[in-house]
Amino acid sequence: MALGTSRVGHQGFSVPAVVAGVSNMTEPEVAAGSAVAGTRTGHRVPISAGIVAAIASLTVALMVPWPTTVLAAQRTEKSTAVPVTMDWSRPVYYLPTNRRVVFITVDDGIDRRNRWLSLISSTRTPVVMFPTGEMVTPTPRYWKLAAALGIRVENHTVSHPDLRWLSRYDQRWQICHQSITVRAIAGRRATLFRAPYGAWSSTTMWAARSCGLKYVVQWDTVVDHGNISYARGGLQPGSIVLLHLRPDFELDLQVTLAAARQAGLTPALLTDYLR
Image (cartoon, rainbow, N blue to C red; front, side):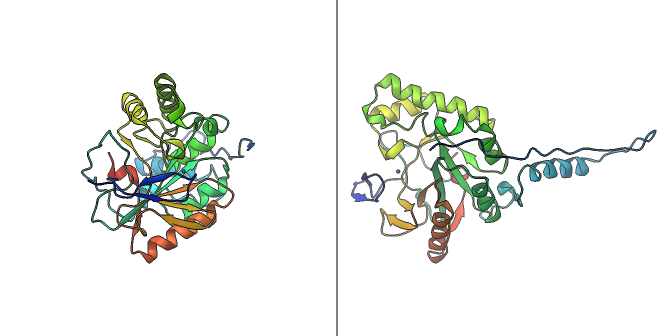
């Protein structure tokens, strides 16, 4: 497949336009909820599986001071794996699919407000987040809560370097070590990797594969400070959109959802399609 290039307006990098396929914070206050079951003295109260499940759901809901719709139960688009074989010579920039879906991804995690998790949950938006280790380590509860709400947490390196300038050993350390962090937060292995700044080399691809990642994923659309830029002339079925956790995240998400509606596309969870 011939490759073209189109600048997407993120960090000044050009990306292939046709490929199968850019603070100082303190721990946010997260209220720790707990479910307490009471019984009358001398009486045993049988608890059904349904009641146990309800208590478990209530426990998650009490963890944050807003409605918490679990995304996994609210996806409007049926999960369907797309038969994409990873070409380890280049990343995936969009998914070749005829299904009218778009994939929203969020990078870094500089601005970690509980409000952002509430916004994602209340809009029932399937999201894959790519935080760096430096954003996860100081605030592990935030990312554990994100994972509990159905937000998929994936690999974006430990410290967000331009990997092209690192040695083979250092690239592998950045990626493998972050996979360990993701597993500690989400309770599962990361399957997707995103290179910081969209900057990668053949060594990056090797390192990601050697660390057990299944796909290296970039983007074909960027939403930044309310502005949207495209590498393929507009949102297309299978487009992967890049946002960041920043002070204007709400605006960027609104712009993304409005563009998806206008294009007749439904947000879907990227990891449901790339397995």
